[in-house]
Amino acid sequence: MVLSRKLIVLKILIKKGGILGTKPYYYEPLRPYTIQKNNKTLEVLMFLDYCKLVWQYNKLEKEAEFKDFREISDYHKHLEWLIERGEDRIPKAVCPHCRSNIVKFYYYEWSKGVPTFSIDDIFCQKCALDKIVNISRLLRFKFSNLKQFYKYGEYNFLNNILPIYKMAFKLPDRITKEIAFKFFKESHEAPPLQQEVSRIQLTSYSRIKQLSLF
Image 1 (tube, rainbow, N blue to C red):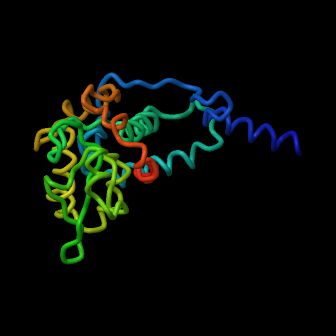
Image 2: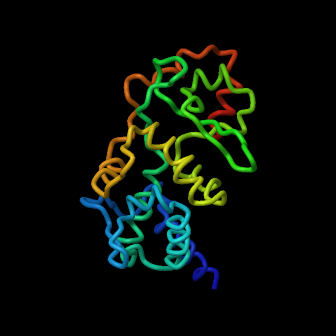
């Protein structure tokens, strides 16, 4: 009985990459993943319906808990790849405050019970440290940070928060499947301008640690 339980745990660790710290499979897509039912791609849906994709991925993960990794579908792998890519994208827009560093954060206010954003609400790390007092409303440009804004309605999301992301990543208003796929395939290395961390004074270290949580 004990041996059987150990084998189950070992199988889970291998599937999750928990022993060697890496996945037991390599997945790097060559093209967008098109959903036949509605002819939309997962890449475009990352911008339009991120919460649903995360829900589907978590459901697939639960179902695959005791499966061999060779049974994991390409749809499952593609979702996993996309969600991971959504966390390490590097913005390209220059900070509107210092006009020298690349933006890293955005800030939101409240108006009539819904969050609001503007072009002045995006910051590089240095300007965020200098200008923002309430850092609880300061978020990184990660796709996981989109989840909390869906509950305020589709119109508010598409016309308020999504344009801020498009502006930060220098994406066009209309995101095609080709544009979206290229965006997620790009390297996540920081561009040369993003060197502001090394120039921040050591007295700001505690606030830097706070910012790194978002």
